[in-house]
Image 1 (cartoon, rainbow, N blue to C red):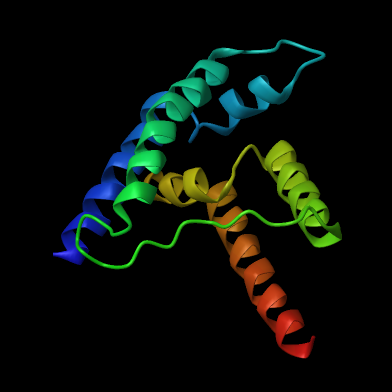
Image 2 (image 1 turned 120 degrees about the vertical axis):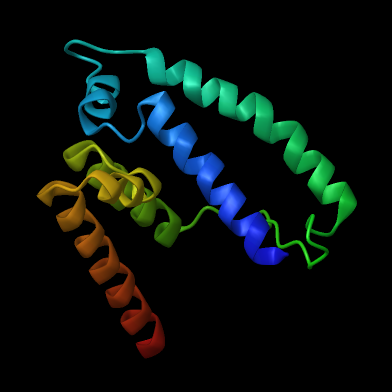
Length: 137
């Protein structure tokens, strides 16, 4: 049953990324181009996502378990530290340069092309480097 929920969630998420334009790097880069030809349409997508996610997270945190009955692991509040700031900067720079963040890049693999393949490869290499550095800490 867990696999059904995972597949359904992935399908809904991927469909939403494609329908909203978040899987189109040109649209994302136009959204990030505040000094040029700014396209604010993704702002409405993000606002709509917040309107759906806020009550869903509140309900899930009160429920304490997933729909499949497993334990619920919600993020805990933490301190803003140097690692969080640096990670956010790296994420933002990558998003701004490529027009992809992890979810849309994986979705974009479905219709091929070198750019999403390179981005996902670099993303996997970055995750591997992080794991290697964490083990050395």
